[in-house]
Image 1: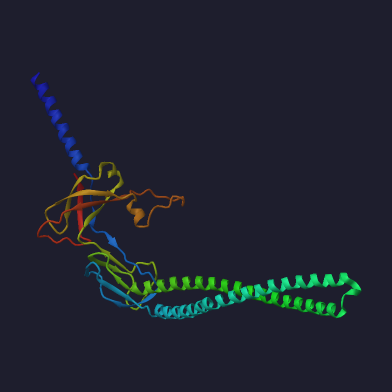
Image 2 (image 1 turned 180 degrees about the vertical axis):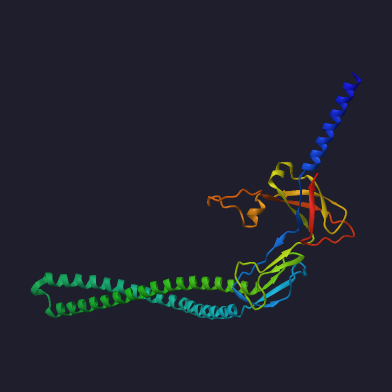
Length: 328
């Protein structure tokens, strides 16, 4: 009986040790890991020649430090041209504001003349009708004079009406031109503001304190609007990017502790899983498999995992340093 109990205990201990050894052996680990940091890539906002470059790859930079100076002579010349056009339009607008009141006053006077002449015509036509009613009793001379006066008044009315139409057309045309000038002035002001802003943006500065990882546009080359000019990495908040095979993914959780062993130092450092990237490393590197080719070869994918760590005292951790990582 004693032997049976001893055998059972020995079996349990053996299974437990084997299980522990299996857990240790199969815990997530990788030797594909390196020191990384948050990247910042300031870009140019205009197409311009780089006339000054103050940094080199590998150098440290500070927040707000000048990195590049762009040539803005073209934009300065455009600004001068736009400003000259703005002055011309402003003078034209001032002239319309002087001319319009005079034209409106003339139109009012002509309108009054039209009304007065129309009233005179009605009166003259009424008198002429009275004379014609009298027949032979009416003086022919009076009838002729009245008829002549009526014709003269009708000619004056036609002249006044033509002048009134001409003045109203001038007023309408000048008013429309005034609106157009104001729209053109608003557009020019926006363009001038844009080119002034471009002039102010001709100096590219560092958005952070960090280290220059790569320079994409050098002195003497042309910067393209919207394209990054430099790659700066925040070396004050470094982390580990470790690539684990996909079969380990179910065993890794955000917040898990990790042992980090740098190739340069003998003692491990404790880290914490910050983020599990949503894209496999093969996809990140641009060599993801082509499933539609018909010749697909199954590959084990590697998942990038971001791990935070505290830099040990009396050690120097640099970007790109290699490490081995195991999840506890």
